[in-house]
Length: 358
Ligand code: SF4
Image 1 (spheres, rainbow, N blue to C red):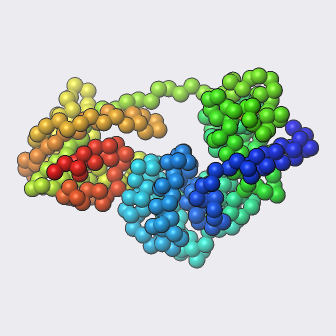
Image 2 (spheres, helix red, strand yellow; image 1 turned 180 degrees about the horizontal axis):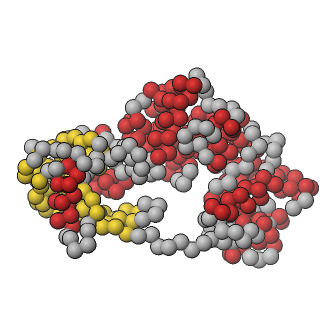
Image 3 (cartoon, rainbow, N blue to C red; image 1 turned 90 degrees about the horizontal axis):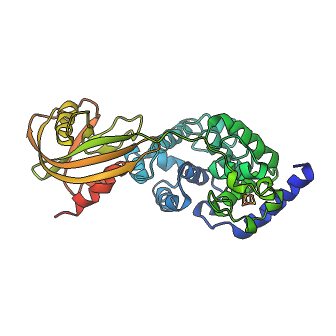
């Protein structure tokens, strides 16, 4: 597109956005911290899922100082079920750095902002363009799809090697006078009109600029690399009871689901039954001898790169004292205390049944 066309594109997109954008809670503020909260949550998560989490989070932690002063467990509890918990841990760490080094202020320069944990390209561009009007293009999944169709980009949207190509395409279109609005408009176009399946090209404000639409090739874009099917693991988990209390353990602070609590268990090995795996894992990780009382439920859950089938058993403590080998903490909790702890999504799928039982 030449300069004149780019200008026309920006004007059409901007007019469409002004009339059609959704009223979302984070669009009603210019507070950089609140915008940052929303963008951390929106990474890899749908808008409708984020809204109640965002509302609750800013009620609990309305400013950097409140987040920094909070215990990580409280932050993880507010994040419970949203997934990608490293986002919450990094955000919490970043708030403490800001309190220690920047009087709790969100840096207004991208170079300083990007030094904070968890602030990558996407967060930096989104927060700095929306809150401080820096001319940085946002390139998320929605924007990549729009760009792939607008320019008929043949590089795969789901491979990091092509990221710079999409970024420079976004840069050529970016309205540097209104970068925040432009970025939000591109994301909104991808979310509302230029959807993955059946995009609404007939209602699209920028269809005259869209190569794929003009060439009748919309269904061929974006290009994607085929991924291997994700592996599936069989997990056995024990709800260990002793004197009307249940045993829960805490995962290491780093890595997948780091810092969250769970019912103990682990992977079923080849040639082993789920019951045997449950007994073995609890002995290995917690040093308790248990016996299986009954099968409780089977849960299926998908993570980004793998899936699990989780068999859950009611168990009784037979002998031994807890000695941790893997988990970093444990608690015997009553039915009513369970929900005070942050748990991963797979555990949440059955916890409600335990807490509802009388
Ligand atoms: S014309 Fe269709 S494919 Fe092109 S940007 Fe608009 S909605 Fe997307």
